[in-house]
Image (tube, rainbow, N blue to C red; front, side):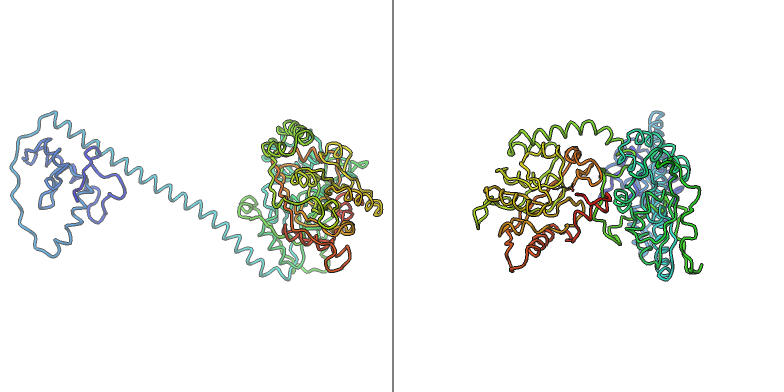
Amino acid sequence: MDPVIDLESGGTTSEEDAPPKEIVSESQQSRKLFGGVWNGFLGIDGSARGLDAVNNSCNSPASSVDDNGEFRGQESVGLLEKRLDVEKPKKKGSKKPPKPPRPPKGPLLDAADQKLVREISELAMLKRARAERMKALKKMKASKTSSSSSSCSSVFAMVVTVLFCLMLILPDRTVVFDVEGTLLRSTNTFHYFMLVALEGGALFRVLLLLLLYPLICFVNEEVGVRVMVMVTFFGMRRSGFRFGRSVLPKHFLDDVGLEGFEVLREAKGRVGVSCLPEEMVEGFLREYMEVEVVVCRRLKVVGGFYVGLMEGDHGRGRGLGLSGVGLGDVAWVGSSKKAALHHVFTQCKRRPKPLIFHDGRIAFKAEPLPTLAILIWVPFSLLLSLFRIHVALFVPYNLSIPIFAFTGMKWRLKNPNQNQTNDLKGQGQLYVCNHRTLLDPIYVSASLNGGGVRAVVYSVSRFSELIAPIKTVMLTRDREEDRRRMESELRSGRGLVVCPEGTTCREPFLLRFSPLFAELTEEVVPVAIKVHVSTFYGTTAGGFKSLDPVFMLMNPFTSYKVEFLEKVKTTTGGGSSIDAANHVQGVIGRALGFECTSLTRKDKYMILAGKSGK
Ligand SMILES: O=P(O)(O)OC[C@H](O)CO
């Protein structure tokens, strides 16, 4: 193949074309190149080819290298070397051919030609220098990348090694660990304080925390925590603070790193040391991480109100409750390089104890930027909520559904063609669904194109009842009265939606199904419902229930999946209504992949609000 010579470059620039070192050294290259230029074309050696020869050499490279391998033209060095490469093996085996006669010497070039050739050679030098610079830069870049990735992988390798060692030595030991440094993945605790401020509904605390965020980042951890405690808790009533058990555990659990969790699981005993106030972190550590002793400071209280300060030392943790434990039985797990470690922690999906109930309105991680975005979003979301309520009330189903979808409320429906009349007695069909939000019956009704379906509700606010686009039947928790009300609805031939859990559950669990529905009819249609909200929870145990629909409809995005399952006979097996209710619970649980429990509404309200929830 004919090689191509780049006149403009006067040499090779790409790495592929660069000469192998063992053939021609760089100084040799330039010597040959420029020597060749002067000797070959400028006729110093007596040749008379002039610029025509330069032009010809583009198409006829052979003319620029003589048979002795001597450079005769302004060839690319790469070309010369390629030729040498090819010719070398031949020379080994064969005798060196006699030198051909030198070409006749021609007249010297005139000044203009000389200038042009000089310019060409200067250009070649510049190009080569640039190529060298590019090469050096590339090398530097490559070495930088490999050093940063190697530092990252070395931190990871270090963590894995330390974890492995810990797992070997921990089974017989009590582990004293730094909660923020080894268990949680977040690099700071700001979003926990912000969450408390948001849930408390105090806008000035939220704004002040946001304003102080740069300062909090700048000062050391201890000072930062003290500032956040002051802003978040000053003047808050002690008796009203339940977030440590009802709201924060969910957010802490989402933040647990798998690596720290694995280490703790192996230990015989666990002592958690935290810089956060005991009121915030203790519930999570004891209830969900099986930590026996929590070492942290309590918030100071004066006259039933927090004053925004913490006790001076980790007083309540003193002694660690480790009496009888020898020093050799205790291992400390902590890190002075928290920031480095947090980057290699992976999210832990497993939990020693499942979290079934949690409260609060905030469904996002309250970092500064998302919080700021939500604050800006709130006025618009209130308008959006109002708009959606109006659509639900005044626009027919077939029109309202696309409008809702357009405003961010996604809805997926499976097997909706259910006849609303019971096959067996001609009475209304009973739809039994799991309970995620107070919109569940509305979605079931919408799936059936309305058709006069009614919803059985318990303990919903007057406001929710007023704005509901379907008729509601309020239960009283008097079994006979409730039976009478539901039977009369079914007798009228209308479909009836019932949520036998009696309360909503946000996590993938089903509460016990109250068996009353199984005593009213011989067949029911189980309906499986899954919901996702992006920003706010539309349910509450300890807050204002009237705001449930407002918060639900303030979400920029929600997704609802409604699946109508095969009809179930409540008389199958001749068992009791309790068996039938458990059977329906199992059918829905399997369809959703949720775990069935025997927990009740009362359990939920006792855990989250400290009351029975009647
Ligand atoms: O507020 P919840 O979560 O107890 O749910 C109330 C229900 O909508 C009862 O029908």
